[in-house]
Length: 593
Image 1: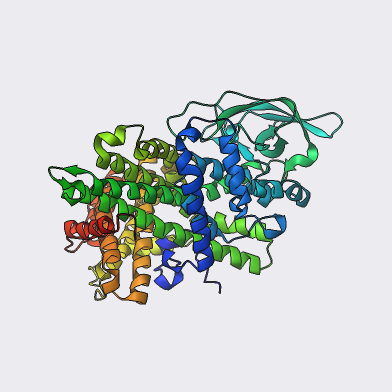
Image 2: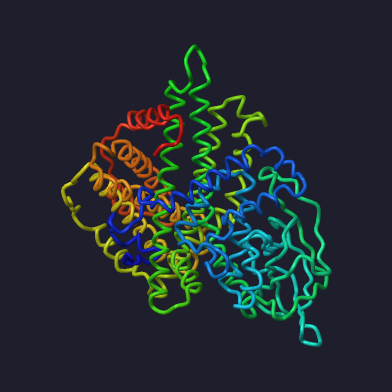
């Protein structure tokens, strides 16, 4: 069964029903078995050897990646005819989640299976795929992705690596320098981005690591993820057969952007696993550690931290798999219309590029919060290099930089949604004008608030009106200069991100209530209510900052009055809700939501 495919960014203007989304309560037995296999792999192959991994013991990470290949974990997204398992997109996210608590290994795994393998899988010729993909799926060969250069950073297309066709027309000679290349120390094949002659855009090439003219700097000394290989790679007149061009000339920048979309949502799934792992560590320590004659899990200050860790993680999980199903639905729809499966996959993910950026930001910031509070719960022991939370804290920090910084992703999310509106793919103008009309009208008392989450459903509608009001007014007022007003763009983005996350948790809990009833969902309801209660205050403050940054006089006063109307909270006792959530976590002594 294929659900009606929701368009990317459409959540802002459409009332989404819980029947339209997938929730983590719906995993089937096969998917649960894959998750268990990943969990077992981490417990058996990674956790006992963390110090050896972080000390970069020679060939250890390489051998672990090979073991993952033997189990089929490297080929989950690879079609069966090329040696993989061919699972759907959300199942690949599930595997990424369970491998996400593997510290440095999760980075090596993600680089190999994501940016290392997928450009070739989705853009390679049949000959290229048959030559390389089975080896990558089995772990016989390892992959790395060479995009970033010393001067390029977030501006990927500004890279200076050059490719020149040899006089005989049989090879490209490639010269340049790449940095921060994950898996570089043991990769067998590199996807390398270079500009041919004076081309405006990058072209991608497949270069085997044994090629003459490739050299590597020593391993980088990093704050975290110390066990992942990260080296600079130098190409000095490396001859690459013309048939190893990936896709067509100047298509490299597009390849990079589309693969980054996948990387962003995969990162969200990975940090979700990391968050759950850190919560397990937090609650176990809180139950074991005694101060003033009782375990610290009995104290309100600690319970607040535990509950908030759970709330943010539960919300991230809700949003990640909602988006994963949306992408699967879009892929199925495109494939059913006659599009090649690989192209349908790329196009389906591209349709939800804004959501991928949203999840990358929300996910990395969720994990940062969770590991920071884990260290705080551990106290002095959390600062010791002997504790797992110290490692988790350091390893987490890179995620706000990986796959485009969070600042870039915040602006990208807004930019992609506005571009869709300009192209006519998303009707933002109609709903925005309707909201503008409400500013002058008598407030509508609305429908009666039904069910335990009626208040939250009304608040969500207010959140969406706030996005439309602030973004619509900013576009109208600032026109072409809006792209330079980064603070305002970041405000709009934060409202959009918080709204997407709030809607995701609301829909998940509504769906669960429909199946199990309100009594069985008391804790889920507490999570949704507390999160949306908090987001109401956050969105109101962020919207106020934006309005005061571009409007003044009567215009500003009118919007600020409307904002109060849109975001009107009812009574909610956050302490009681968090106490219930924390109590369940403490009793189960692990993440159990």
